Image 1: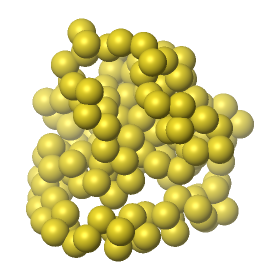
Image 2: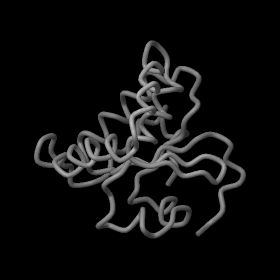
Image 3: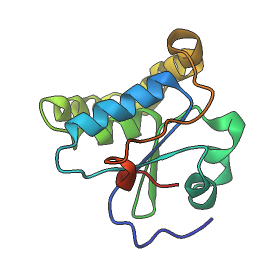
Image 4: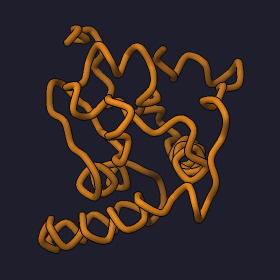
Length: 138
């Protein structure tokens, strides 16, 4: 794994060809007024160099990943930690963290398993607009 010690902001890694995942990234960007998060697709070089292979392999793109200062959170735990930093009432969702992880992740896995069927898939990863480019890692 590569090193990214110079990056202080939390990094959200997502399936770059998934319509639901791309919509989720746009949702976060709109509610992250302080620009606390950076983003990278799970298909990116950044992911290949900075995540354990089990998370960045093509067959394992089933989870959103939140990486911050060496800590890696996945699935529902990542989603709730992200919600906690957004503007508006979204941080209230963090209260769901009290639900046991195996139950939260069971629901997450159902959505993840069906996301292409329900929401579609792109042929290539999302290309950020020029003004958003600085928030995306290659």
